[in-house]
Amino acid sequence: MTSPVAATSREPLPSVLTVANIVYALHAFAIVVGLVGTATIVGSFVGSVPSIVAVVLNYIKRSDARGTWAESHYRWQIRTFWYSIVWVLVAGVLFVTLIGIPFAFAILGILAIWLAYRIGKGWLRLRDHRPMYTD
Image 1 (cartoon, rainbow, N blue to C red):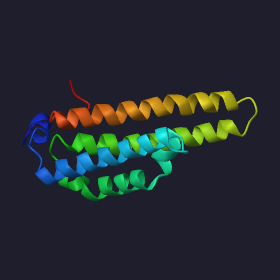
Image 2 (image 1 turned 90 degrees about the vertical axis):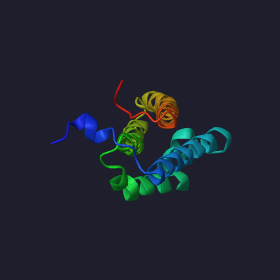
Image 3 (image 1 turned 180 degrees about the horizontal axis):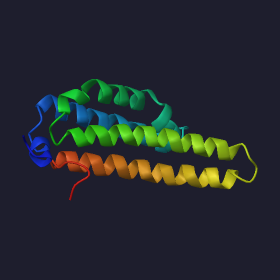
């Protein structure tokens, strides 16, 4: 029986790292489109084709990363997407009430910063061949 640390310290296949880099790049592209385009960062991240393609890639290829340190990046990327969906829904519910509108805008602003942080931190750790959730 191997320890959890030993099981996740195995080096991933190059294709696993390539897909993880592509997913970070797609999410980063969606954020940039939100910054410079007519969409918002959050709207572009949640509803754009690049982000949806990124999540689909995550689900298709995450089994290839199982048992390696790269598995944590796939989990990080998937959770980033789904947590952002949840917070957009919360903001949407708040937005339909007159009193909740300022809170909805605050949630969306914080979410935009959080998305940039998550994608940036994850991509930097991937570049350094470091797993997420440790250190």
